[in-house]
Image 1 (cartoon, one colour):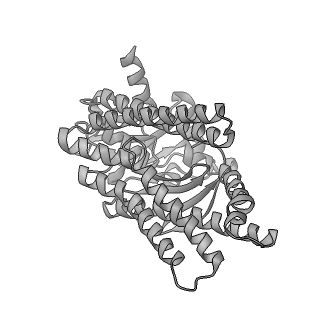
Image 2 (cartoon, rainbow, N blue to C red):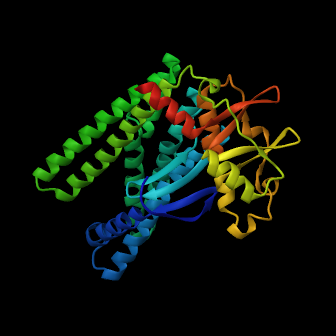
Image 3 (cartoon, rainbow, N blue to C red):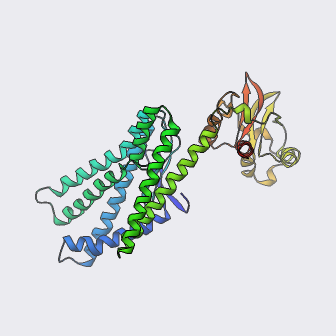
Length: 369
């Protein structure tokens, strides 16, 4: 998601961010509640009371959205799937899960967790609204949040990707066909159809004079359509990688740095000469680490004359290597997960080559021409 966002904390170790667009929708929701909803259900109150209730209800609404996303995240974490972050933005919330579920069952449980949480929240607010002797303000806020949470659950259960219902559909199709990519493609197509339908409703509302609701339908429909279309393209890209091994795309001629070189020497004789973004580091013929531009940029220029490659490099570990027979998707996932631009291709402790993000991109570009 583009645009500026800020991290405001962590929940269960997951970074929580607020996108700049959230402030707009928060203000609109608060205004709508304070000017229309609460004056209609609670009469003879001061304006500041309506605004206080509006802000409170808006905050509780987004807290409900956050709990909905946490439902997805906590189930994903039980399957050891890492969560990059949760972001609150104009259309509610989004949990960025770093990789796909390992099985159809896991996909189903992760997807259905959010709507279940929203239903439970809706029932809790329903109970609050029905408490004997509950203050009218509490009843009004609870009834609104009950309706919103139940609507959120129903909307998300629409069987079109990327909505939760689309992920449930994908889980079912995946279990039936045993083909993850085909299941994703079909559920994304359904998602595009639902998004197009939302946009048609939006156009109808605008023509009928309901501009605010119509524009909102158009924006949500456009967002869902774009997300579903992007997923469809991503699946096509992943399918183009099927059957490719790391050995097919690696660079076999590996240039290595000696651990005793100064950073000045490494830059002048290797980085500038070869134009690579990183090099494996050896010491006594043994692979000991990796030095890339990322590590160099963190060191002040005046220190390059005294620091050696071995002092600055990222030490070698099993996570830095990959076997030539592994699928290229495994290399891409590891590079994405560990934020690496390259991996050393090894077989029986022998360095065979390097696989890099740029190398994979060039290979696929040439293959598609």
